Image 1: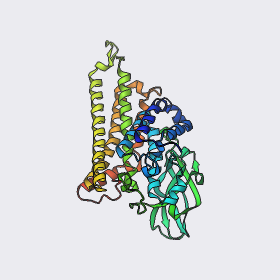
Image 2: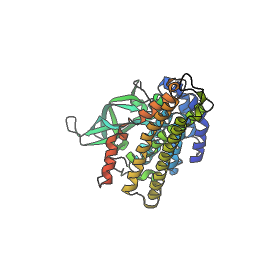
Image 3: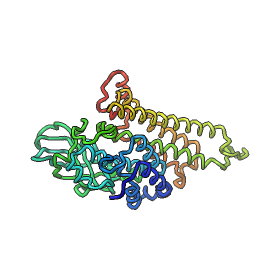
Image 4: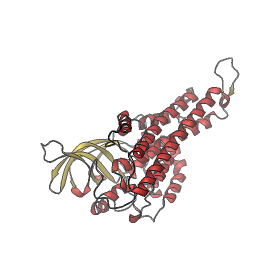
Length: 390
């Protein structure tokens, strides 16, 4: 195991990798996965250990710093930011699983986790645990993961109706990864399908979905919330990094370029065109507002968790709304940038098409759908926040 790394050490290590991650994004897209050597560099940088408790030698990185980390990675390549966010959930699971299971699954701090929580599998109860069978999709970062998890409907016997849902954990070698990730966005995230048949998973390697875990062994705001909340919040770093990259790339492209809209019109610097100045100002305002909303609400959430061990429904709702706002805004900003660049944006040699496709892809995730936004609106009228990942 590597020596101890602080949050600042990991952020510095990741910043140093940004140029290489960015330069190799197209290569990763063609490979349809996080490149193996880059995955190892990210492991060495400490990315996969960020949620491990200090009591276990981890940095126990605060949520705002986790978002900063994901934002930095996503500025370089949204696929890497997305996959790494999921991969570094390892520390949370090591903190809330039982001690023996955590030690067996995560013997060192630098192990990555992947998988899908939706209960697409079947877990039939057997003595000492469950017999798990199923097939899941969208396992971002699964190619270099050390542990996979699968959401399962629980059956007390083979022919029974489901009685609940669990997350089942097992080493990556226990699952079959299928080469299915042929996508329009997040090309390099390696979000393949995976499956297993009659896999025995002992009781101690299971978490109950939809409940605060009763086996939580560590205090602190990182582990106080249920998994659906703690693990989703840092995803907001992906759209924030993607937007910043789109704006910076557009400014770089526009600067020094001349443009003539009509055949007889004298070419003028593109940066002097009124439509360009207006569009880029709007893009920056939207991006800045989304970033301020995200970090501001996360700061409030963190303060309440530190002082009270829980936070108000209002704060939980605002954090979730800020996350949705950032995702939707990223799609708007990248589309605006794409339109502002004009015809050259369609070339693969420029990054604008890939950025737009990534912005669209991240909005397709199930927990970022309009159904959840509608639910958040319901919370404003006194509705239940349960199931809202807030």
